[in-house]
Image 1 (tube, rainbow, N blue to C red):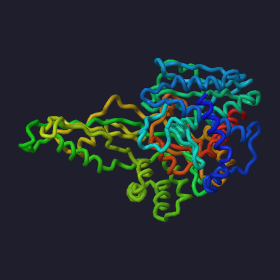
Image 2 (cartoon, rainbow, N blue to C red; image 1 turned 90 degrees about the vertical axis):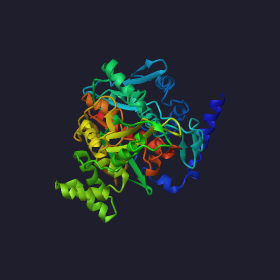
Image 3 (cartoon, rainbow, N blue to C red; image 1 turned 135 degrees about the horizontal axis):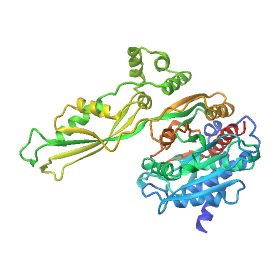
Image 4 (cartoon, helix red, strand yellow; image 1 turned 120 degrees about the vertical axis):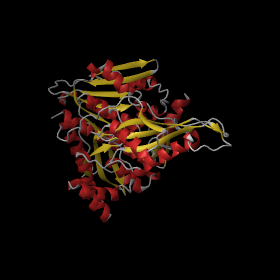
Length: 484
């Protein structure tokens, strides 16, 4: 009863949202085009917000995940809907994936798959201004862990799927919704599906997942980035060894000193600039919006030049912005340092962890070899944790799904530049690409950079007005690709 009362108060509080939300926060979401047939914007806003509120309220921090409750909630929402077949599939006790298969009345093409994940990363309760698992509306935003990663997309997907279920006589493709477990721990859920239940999704021609961005800026939407590829995450263990002893007698071969020197050298080392068709297209599109003359020229150079010296000079300019730098080269981030047992003991060993995001087509083993050379410390060894994985192929921009993503963006945000992009973070999409299913990424909720950066951070939030925008965008994309 308390939860129902809380939900009622939350939904009531958003009824007067237009009176309390700043105009600048609202204007990016004002659609001047008519809503598509079969899509009621008022109802879609209410439904998407209701689903998201409920999903945020189900604590699926990974670890331990406990996605089963969230999967059963999705099952309850879709229960009894004509044409939808569902499965809640437990991997281990309490950990579950969810699949909903909307059957077209007369399918003539292969299915389209849409994905989101059920788990979320952990929280530091001391840093949150609102309880992270009690969704809170304030100043036009809905706060809560998972609001944008990835329960917001999941809620919008549910709304779109239910609207499409009413029009399945018009569809020529089945639509499969897959909500995965354990994405935040390296994609265990999707790998489990591919190993044990691949038959449920192998009929998909292509897939839509998280990963891209729709940028809201100064009351408008200038940019839509559609992910066609992504970096592959790896971890490198750095181990330093040396003699141990009493701290009263300093030793020249101190393991922690060698570790510190090695890690600093690799931290300051820049891996080579490597462009691919996606990053060239991305910077070409971005140059059309860039106002800084030097940055604009650098973007244009990267998009068109094949001269390595010119590319390096342009990259030096763009690398001043960390987000662009991460797109230009394999990224190396120091994440863990460990060493020592007491303040007066020189330890015989110290370790560090480097999280490396490898560009498509680059070999992590070659990167590790170069790290050992750059560090130049005989007592320090850099080694790959686990097995090396090759990058899956880049998804083509000529498929019907990419075309639908671009077309729907053109209708809803006609001024926006639409470009393919490479995600610097890892998603479940890489596993699908490796299985031969072209996969595209989009976070369908338009938002400012400041809000994007709250992903995995404190006080994660989504603009309330973005929810209906995202639901309509997914509806349009799926209807375009599944009805022509």
